[in-house]
Image 1 (tube, rainbow, N blue to C red):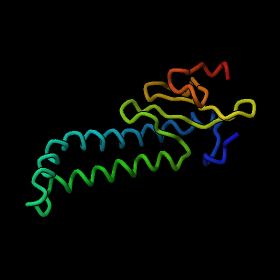
Image 2 (cartoon, one colour; image 1 turned 120 degrees about the horizontal axis):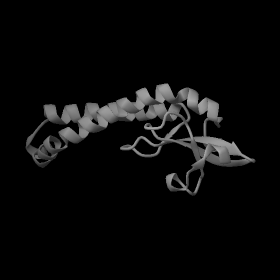
Image 3 (cartoon, rainbow, N blue to C red; image 1 turned 90 degrees about the vertical axis):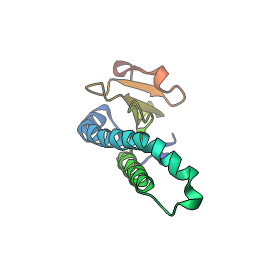
Image 4 (cartoon, helix red, strand yellow; image 1 turned 90 degrees about the horizontal axis):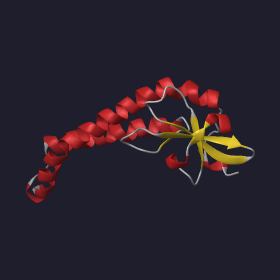
Amino acid sequence: MGEDRFTRLFTVEEANGLLPRLRELFAEVARHRDAMRDRNLQVEEVLENAPADSGSRAASEYLAEAHGLYRSMERIRELGVMLKDLDAGIMDFPCERGGELVFLCWHPREESVRYWHEVEDGYRGRRPISEL
């Protein structure tokens, strides 16, 4: 079934139980992501002047945000959840369906996990939980 690639398999109830924490973690991800984007132009200037510059505040701040982004994403991964879209916050939870691996799929705009999809199908192949 391939479950050895994942730290755990989820039921719908288990996935829904993690949503408050995942909302918090995705808010951290979004904050760091946005801060990196805001600093991107400054960092581009720093990189252009890198041979003459021994370091800058802009580069340090950018790296701090990058590290924060990595740590927030890592916390999500440690829960056994996959962040599939850094902008939209789409997350997948490995799940078993009839002995096969599938993914429960959640978007932060949704109140609960209401969809699932085959591994190969991705977000566009989402189906209602009632079909699980």
